[in-house]
Image 1: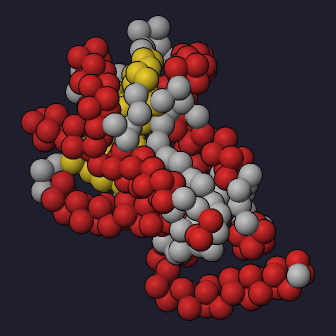
Image 2: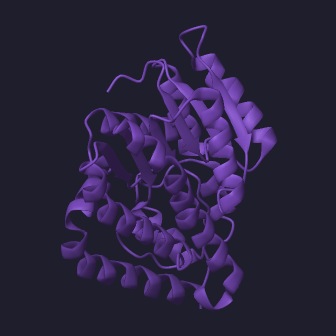
Length: 273
């Protein structure tokens, strides 16, 4: 797929994987529209994306909106479409995570996490899909997580929201294929982003020990895999050996992983007691 002068819309495009993907696509000639909550972060992102552009007529526009607010999200998408035309590609990178012990996490955190990670994605797809269907072309990319393939200790608000994206993608793929629209779901490994930095502030020690051995990726490397996946029309994009195996064999590997995780939890708790 050629990204030159294509309109690519990215929710959560002001930081992390979303911003890195936007910069990479800008370097391949794309026009970008970013939707995120914080105007100041969006301004910085637009500057970085503009610096990555290769043509003088490329555009990078930002729209401040909370993706969990259906009206605000839809309005931002409509405004972006009015200025840049219908999106050729939608990437839903907006997401939040707040790890902790299940009993200590307020219900509001579960509700907000599902609202942003799942419904924020759903609202964007609902708003964009008619525009793609009318032209019978386009591509939608959902950003899930390794925690969307296997449930992790300490991630009881986050894992279910990412599992939900997997279910949505697997259910929707066949419908979209019949009308000429591609769909990808991405399972990034731990990635060095502001979100991960925030997660580490509330992450239980058991969770830190479970994830300690996982390879840390840079957002630019994940972005490369996402763009490659779009180009090759891949449904599952699982960067790295660990995520690749987990994406293919998660059901087979689950009992062994649960045994391994349980050992780490037991050891961590014995050391702290």
